Length: 275
Length: 121
Image (cartoon, rainbow over all chains, first blue to last red; front, side, top):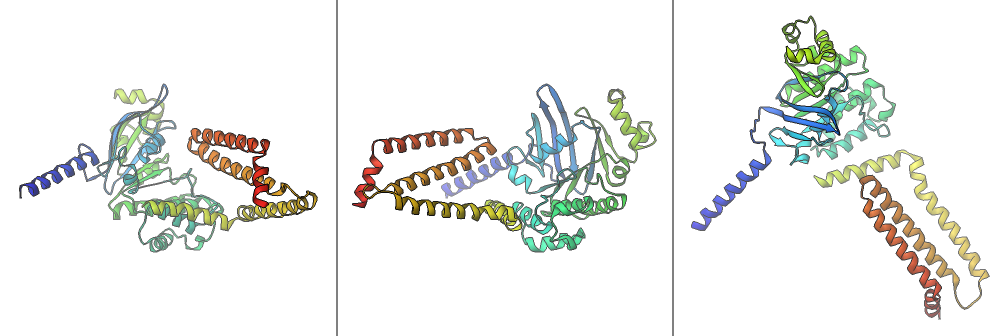
């Protein structure tokens, strides 16, 4: 009896220790992504300088900033492609540094500069990525996504032969394959015509509203950001300068539009820092 | 989970080879060319060599060993370069050097010739 109780306690303590190791020190299940004091340096150059932010469930957060501000570096660190110099990234409370594979199964990514391999057809690409993500009932999932993204007629067309808009839709279908809890989108609508861009925006908005995941979105289209994002983070020289609702943020800083605010941040980040 | 990762990579290679003639053809063409080439060479050498020491099996053995080592070196070098495992390349180069020396030693001292003669007699 004593030994049995002892074993139970050992098991409980082991489980607690494993949970502590698995989860970040302050776990929060309402947050999909939690970034704390993230830094990245390339020699003497500081690309990302101690940024902290969260992405909640059903939330679309815009990561804005001029070229070279550190947006893509941040996304690459969240994806585990780049190792941060310091700081912590937790997805659904699980630290990416220690449980990379487990975390990446719940994450997905789409960017206009990372299209699907052009020498495979849309269906073949979705099948290969579905296996990589360990998607269950893959055939049904692929059918549903082909239908959702209006790609049925392109299922046997090589991705390299598709137009920009069709390639973006195929990339987004791939990004939705594993029903990710965190969707990272790096300028997903760049180089698309307004009609297709609106269609894509609606699909991503539906994803955020209907599922349990959150979206981190980078874009240079301020109209789009205002339309889609519930919250924006202005990044400049690796630091978050402003954070807030894209609809009210310009007025709070004496600007008429989000675009004007963006230009101010891009040109005079230090002035805004003082404000 | 890891099985599905491997399956994905294998499936991708299958799709690539199936969808591209320029990838599929060399798999068979080079093997075919080598078979025909060495078939004719062997046939010719058998007719010109004198009886006694059989030169053909030694030559074919050397060629096979050479080809095998080149393939191994190529495969491991590519993997090594891709994954940054330069030490593997070094090991293979050392192994190639070692086997070449062993083979040259065997030819020089007549080990292969004696072995062939003994096996055939």
